[in-house]
Image (tube, rainbow, N blue to C red; front, side, top):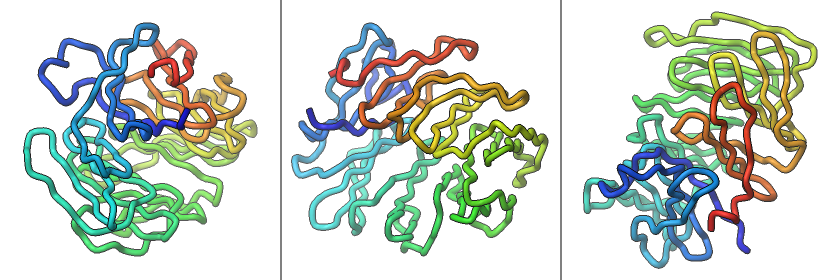
Length: 284
Protein backbone atom coordinates (compact mmCIF):
# COMPACT_ATOMS: atom_id res chain seq x y z
CA UNK A 1 0.00 0.00 0.00
CA UNK A 2 1.37 3.36 -0.93
CA UNK A 3 2.13 5.72 1.90
CA UNK A 4 -0.49 8.40 2.39
CA UNK A 5 0.37 12.02 2.96
CA UNK A 6 -1.89 13.34 5.68
CA UNK A 7 -3.28 16.86 5.42
CA UNK A 8 -4.54 18.51 8.60
CA UNK A 9 -7.85 20.34 8.35
CA UNK A 10 -10.65 21.75 10.42
CA UNK A 11 -13.81 19.88 11.25
CA UNK A 12 -15.89 22.35 9.23
CA UNK A 13 -15.10 21.93 5.54
CA UNK A 14 -16.13 21.92 1.91
CA UNK A 15 -19.89 21.51 1.86
CA UNK A 16 -23.04 22.44 3.69
CA UNK A 17 -24.07 18.79 3.86
CA UNK A 18 -21.02 18.09 6.02
CA UNK A 19 -21.90 20.55 8.80
CA UNK A 20 -23.75 17.96 10.90
CA UNK A 21 -21.12 15.25 10.42
CA UNK A 22 -17.99 15.20 12.60
CA UNK A 23 -14.80 15.28 10.57
CA UNK A 24 -11.21 14.72 11.64
CA UNK A 25 -9.71 16.14 8.46
CA UNK A 26 -8.59 15.19 4.99
CA UNK A 27 -5.90 13.06 3.40
CA UNK A 28 -4.13 13.27 0.07
CA UNK A 29 -4.35 9.77 -1.39
CA UNK A 30 -1.49 9.45 -3.88
CA UNK A 31 -2.82 6.17 -5.28
CA UNK A 32 -6.09 7.74 -6.49
CA UNK A 33 -4.76 11.32 -6.88
CA UNK A 34 -7.59 12.60 -4.73
CA UNK A 35 -8.31 14.37 -1.46
CA UNK A 36 -10.37 12.19 0.86
CA UNK A 37 -12.40 13.27 3.88
CA UNK A 38 -12.12 11.31 7.13
CA UNK A 39 -15.63 11.55 8.55
CA UNK A 40 -16.95 10.39 11.90
CA UNK A 41 -14.99 9.83 15.09
CA UNK A 42 -12.18 7.41 16.02
CA UNK A 43 -13.65 3.92 16.27
CA UNK A 44 -16.27 4.71 13.64
CA UNK A 45 -14.59 6.40 10.69
CA UNK A 46 -15.36 6.40 7.00
CA UNK A 47 -13.50 7.63 3.97
CA UNK A 48 -15.49 10.09 1.83
CA UNK A 49 -14.70 11.75 -1.48
CA UNK A 50 -13.43 15.31 -1.45
CA UNK A 51 -13.13 18.12 -4.01
CA UNK A 52 -12.55 17.25 -7.64
CA UNK A 53 -8.92 17.73 -8.70
CA UNK A 54 -7.28 17.71 -12.14
CA UNK A 55 -6.20 14.26 -13.29
CA UNK A 56 -2.60 15.41 -13.72
CA UNK A 57 -2.18 16.66 -10.14
CA UNK A 58 1.15 15.65 -8.59
CA UNK A 59 0.58 16.63 -4.96
CA UNK A 60 -1.89 18.65 -2.88
CA UNK A 61 -2.04 20.68 0.33
CA UNK A 62 -5.14 22.08 2.07
CA UNK A 63 -5.38 25.00 4.49
CA UNK A 64 -6.37 24.23 8.11
CA UNK A 65 -9.72 25.93 7.63
CA UNK A 66 -10.28 24.33 4.20
CA UNK A 67 -10.79 27.75 2.63
CA UNK A 68 -8.23 26.97 -0.05
CA UNK A 69 -5.98 24.24 -1.33
CA UNK A 70 -2.85 24.18 -3.45
CA UNK A 71 -2.05 21.56 -6.05
CA UNK A 72 1.23 20.90 -7.83
CA UNK A 73 0.82 20.30 -11.58
CA UNK A 74 3.27 19.08 -14.23
CA UNK A 75 5.57 21.53 -16.02
CA UNK A 76 6.39 23.48 -12.83
CA UNK A 77 2.93 24.89 -12.23
CA UNK A 78 1.20 25.48 -8.89
CA UNK A 79 -2.53 26.14 -8.71
CA UNK A 80 -4.43 27.61 -5.77
CA UNK A 81 -8.13 26.86 -5.55
CA UNK A 82 -10.71 28.47 -3.28
CA UNK A 83 -13.67 26.94 -1.49
CA UNK A 84 -16.20 29.63 -2.42
CA UNK A 85 -14.97 30.56 -5.89
CA UNK A 86 -14.77 28.79 -9.23
CA UNK A 87 -11.64 30.69 -10.28
CA UNK A 88 -8.11 29.44 -9.70
CA UNK A 89 -4.88 31.30 -9.13
CA UNK A 90 -1.82 29.81 -10.82
CA UNK A 91 1.89 30.59 -10.44
CA UNK A 92 5.04 29.12 -11.93
CA UNK A 93 7.25 27.10 -9.66
CA UNK A 94 8.52 23.63 -8.93
CA UNK A 95 6.85 21.45 -6.32
CA UNK A 96 7.76 22.92 -2.89
CA UNK A 97 8.95 20.87 0.04
CA UNK A 98 6.22 22.44 2.16
CA UNK A 99 3.17 24.65 1.66
CA UNK A 100 2.45 26.81 4.70
CA UNK A 101 -0.89 28.38 5.60
CA UNK A 102 -1.69 31.04 8.16
CA UNK A 103 -3.82 29.94 11.15
CA UNK A 104 -6.92 31.51 9.57
CA UNK A 105 -6.23 29.66 6.32
CA UNK A 106 -6.15 32.75 4.11
CA UNK A 107 -2.43 33.36 3.55
CA UNK A 108 -0.28 30.89 1.63
CA UNK A 109 3.48 30.48 1.43
CA UNK A 110 5.75 28.12 -0.48
CA UNK A 111 8.92 26.72 1.06
CA UNK A 112 11.60 24.97 -0.96
CA UNK A 113 13.55 24.05 2.16
CA UNK A 114 16.11 21.94 0.32
CA UNK A 115 16.91 24.96 -1.88
CA UNK A 116 16.80 27.58 0.93
CA UNK A 117 13.98 29.46 -0.84
CA UNK A 118 10.72 30.81 0.58
CA UNK A 119 7.92 32.89 -0.97
CA UNK A 120 4.52 34.22 -0.08
CA UNK A 121 2.06 33.22 -2.80
CA UNK A 122 2.52 35.37 -5.90
CA UNK A 123 5.77 36.95 -4.69
CA UNK A 124 9.32 36.31 -5.82
CA UNK A 125 11.20 33.71 -3.75
CA UNK A 126 13.70 34.98 -1.20
CA UNK A 127 16.64 33.17 0.27
CA UNK A 128 15.77 31.78 3.69
CA UNK A 129 17.93 29.32 5.58
CA UNK A 130 15.80 27.94 8.40
CA UNK A 131 14.95 24.75 10.24
CA UNK A 132 11.32 25.76 10.82
CA UNK A 133 8.92 28.59 9.85
CA UNK A 134 5.55 29.71 11.20
CA UNK A 135 3.29 31.87 8.98
CA UNK A 136 1.10 34.53 10.61
CA UNK A 137 -2.34 35.81 9.51
CA UNK A 138 -0.90 39.13 8.31
CA UNK A 139 1.69 37.46 6.08
CA UNK A 140 4.57 38.00 8.51
CA UNK A 141 6.41 34.90 9.61
CA UNK A 142 8.69 33.64 12.35
CA UNK A 143 11.72 31.60 11.40
CA UNK A 144 14.16 29.57 13.43
CA UNK A 145 17.60 29.61 11.86
CA UNK A 146 19.92 26.63 11.93
CA UNK A 147 22.00 28.10 14.76
CA UNK A 148 18.91 28.59 16.95
CA UNK A 149 18.26 32.27 16.32
CA UNK A 150 14.49 32.88 16.37
CA UNK A 151 13.33 36.07 14.65
CA UNK A 152 10.46 37.60 12.74
CA UNK A 153 10.49 38.31 9.01
CA UNK A 154 10.65 42.01 9.91
CA UNK A 155 14.05 41.34 11.47
CA UNK A 156 13.06 41.50 15.16
CA UNK A 157 15.01 39.04 17.28
CA UNK A 158 13.11 36.96 19.84
CA UNK A 159 16.23 35.22 21.10
CA UNK A 160 19.06 32.81 20.38
CA UNK A 161 18.48 29.36 21.85
CA UNK A 162 21.12 27.09 20.35
CA UNK A 163 21.23 24.76 17.32
CA UNK A 164 19.02 22.09 18.93
CA UNK A 165 16.12 24.45 19.74
CA UNK A 166 12.59 23.99 18.44
CA UNK A 167 9.54 26.25 18.73
CA UNK A 168 5.77 26.10 18.47
CA UNK A 169 2.97 28.68 18.41
CA UNK A 170 -0.67 28.33 19.38
CA UNK A 171 -2.90 31.39 19.51
CA UNK A 172 -0.89 34.07 21.38
CA UNK A 173 1.54 31.66 23.07
CA UNK A 174 5.03 30.77 21.86
CA UNK A 175 7.11 28.02 23.44
CA UNK A 176 10.77 27.37 22.76
CA UNK A 177 12.27 24.02 23.77
CA UNK A 178 16.00 23.40 23.97
CA UNK A 179 18.02 20.82 25.92
CA UNK A 180 17.36 21.54 29.59
CA UNK A 181 14.81 24.33 29.19
CA UNK A 182 11.28 25.36 28.20
CA UNK A 183 10.80 29.11 27.58
CA UNK A 184 7.29 30.58 27.33
CA UNK A 185 6.41 33.78 25.47
CA UNK A 186 3.10 35.56 25.05
CA UNK A 187 2.20 38.04 22.35
CA UNK A 188 1.35 41.59 23.39
CA UNK A 189 0.41 43.83 20.47
CA UNK A 190 3.16 43.11 17.92
CA UNK A 191 5.77 41.90 20.40
CA UNK A 192 6.60 38.53 21.92
CA UNK A 193 7.41 38.88 25.64
CA UNK A 194 8.98 36.17 27.78
CA UNK A 195 6.70 35.24 30.69
CA UNK A 196 8.31 32.07 32.07
CA UNK A 197 11.46 29.97 31.93
CA UNK A 198 11.57 26.40 33.27
CA UNK A 199 14.88 24.56 33.53
CA UNK A 200 15.09 20.77 33.96
CA UNK A 201 18.10 18.57 33.23
CA UNK A 202 15.81 15.85 31.88
CA UNK A 203 14.64 17.87 28.84
CA UNK A 204 16.41 16.41 25.77
CA UNK A 205 16.79 17.72 22.24
CA UNK A 206 13.60 17.41 20.18
CA UNK A 207 12.84 17.04 16.49
CA UNK A 208 9.56 18.93 16.90
CA UNK A 209 7.20 20.26 19.56
CA UNK A 210 3.48 21.10 19.42
CA UNK A 211 1.53 23.02 22.07
CA UNK A 212 -1.22 20.80 23.48
CA UNK A 213 -2.42 22.97 26.37
CA UNK A 214 -1.33 25.86 28.57
CA UNK A 215 1.07 23.59 30.48
CA UNK A 216 1.81 20.72 28.10
CA UNK A 217 3.65 20.13 24.85
CA UNK A 218 3.75 17.06 22.67
CA UNK A 219 7.32 16.42 21.54
CA UNK A 220 8.89 14.23 18.88
CA UNK A 221 12.34 13.06 19.94
CA UNK A 222 15.35 12.93 17.64
CA UNK A 223 14.97 9.13 17.41
CA UNK A 224 11.24 9.21 16.63
CA UNK A 225 9.84 8.97 20.16
CA UNK A 226 6.60 10.77 20.96
CA UNK A 227 5.69 12.01 24.41
CA UNK A 228 3.92 14.63 26.49
CA UNK A 229 5.93 17.04 28.63
CA UNK A 230 4.51 19.17 31.43
CA UNK A 231 6.17 22.56 31.03
CA UNK A 232 6.06 23.76 34.64
CA UNK A 233 7.33 20.63 36.40
CA UNK A 234 9.25 18.78 33.68
CA UNK A 235 7.32 15.51 34.03
CA UNK A 236 7.18 13.21 30.99
CA UNK A 237 4.67 10.69 29.66
CA UNK A 238 5.64 8.36 26.81
CA UNK A 239 3.13 7.91 23.98
CA UNK A 240 5.20 6.10 21.33
CA UNK A 241 8.72 4.73 21.71
CA UNK A 242 9.72 5.15 18.05
CA UNK A 243 8.53 5.56 14.45
CA UNK A 244 7.24 9.16 14.47
CA UNK A 245 8.77 11.66 12.02
CA UNK A 246 6.40 14.57 12.47
CA UNK A 247 3.30 15.46 14.49
CA UNK A 248 0.56 17.59 12.91
CA UNK A 249 -2.19 18.95 15.17
CA UNK A 250 -5.65 19.14 13.65
CA UNK A 251 -7.59 22.34 14.16
CA UNK A 252 -10.06 20.48 16.38
CA UNK A 253 -8.41 20.45 19.80
CA UNK A 254 -7.06 17.10 20.93
CA UNK A 255 -6.68 15.51 17.49
CA UNK A 256 -3.35 14.88 15.79
CA UNK A 257 -1.75 12.97 12.95
CA UNK A 258 1.66 11.39 13.44
CA UNK A 259 3.56 10.84 10.21
CA UNK A 260 6.24 8.21 10.09
CA UNK A 261 6.96 4.64 9.09
CA UNK A 262 3.28 3.90 9.68
CA UNK A 263 1.18 7.06 9.91
CA UNK A 264 -1.12 7.08 12.93
CA UNK A 265 -4.19 8.98 13.95
CA UNK A 266 -3.79 10.20 17.54
CA UNK A 267 -6.50 11.65 19.73
CA UNK A 268 -7.08 12.68 23.33
CA UNK A 269 -10.57 12.79 24.78
CA UNK A 270 -9.40 15.37 27.30
CA UNK A 271 -6.16 17.14 28.08
CA UNK A 272 -5.63 14.89 31.10
CA UNK A 273 -5.74 11.62 29.16
CA UNK A 274 -2.99 10.02 27.19
CA UNK A 275 -3.26 9.86 23.40
CA UNK A 276 -4.68 6.75 21.78
CA UNK A 277 -3.44 5.60 18.40
CA UNK A 278 -4.92 3.78 15.46
CA UNK A 279 -3.00 2.76 12.31
CA UNK A 280 -3.95 5.00 9.42
CA UNK A 281 -4.70 2.16 6.93
CA UNK A 282 -7.74 1.24 9.01
CA UNK A 283 -9.57 4.35 7.79
CA UNK A 284 -9.14 3.58 4.09
